[in-house]
Image 1 (tube, rainbow, N blue to C red):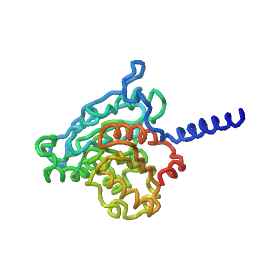
Image 2 (image 1 turned 120 degrees about the vertical axis):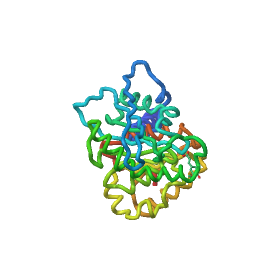
Image 3 (image 1 turned 180 degrees about the vertical axis):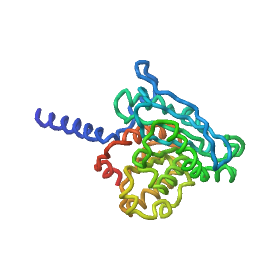
Length: 288
Ligand code: FER
């Protein structure tokens, strides 16, 4: 009996450990709370010239604790939702605190995180009717601003590694749709792609991934997460279904929740831990 008990305990602990090694355990309590003994990264506001929008534009850049110009870093582009701007993640989601805590726990590869304004138009504020067609269209126009203006600016300004395997894109809601559209649409630019609660701007699966074999070969990680009570869940689900049918490895992570920062903070916590390191292929099995 004692042996049986030990065996069961061992099995539970081992399974948890094995699961944890894959970096896909949900965020623990306190992950988004400032701890006084944890070193902090730094947030800069940068201004870049956009040929696409024909104006200067703002973005926020988080550099990790211990950041040094003598090193070269991979970059995560982290995008906001329809009611937000470059400050939305900071206002609602504490990404700098989440990342600081993960660095302290050695859970994450040192990386630069860029939070742009994804509404690529001259007046890019989230004011007035945020659903107005020109404002919604500006989220699509951001693809060109990102690829032709912002990424070159970041790569000329910060010590970054300039290849697809060191570039990730993820976002929440409209930003999740953008990340899937731009990431999967530009596999020569991004090897790591994540959509948290992706919005109706997400392209139809067959447009998103017209060449499953190419996606299979090129992607390091494709992450799709959503709250189970999010009214936008169908946009993640239809993408997941197509990826399963077409045998494209990805993580589909549905958690209890709605369309809010609880899900997006957890998405950032789980996704960012997997970035820029070898991906254990067994993590894909869980989501199919
Ligand atoms: C819509 C519903 C939601 C839509 C966009 C959203 C463009 C975006 C939500 C968000 O970013 O939080 O019909 O159409």
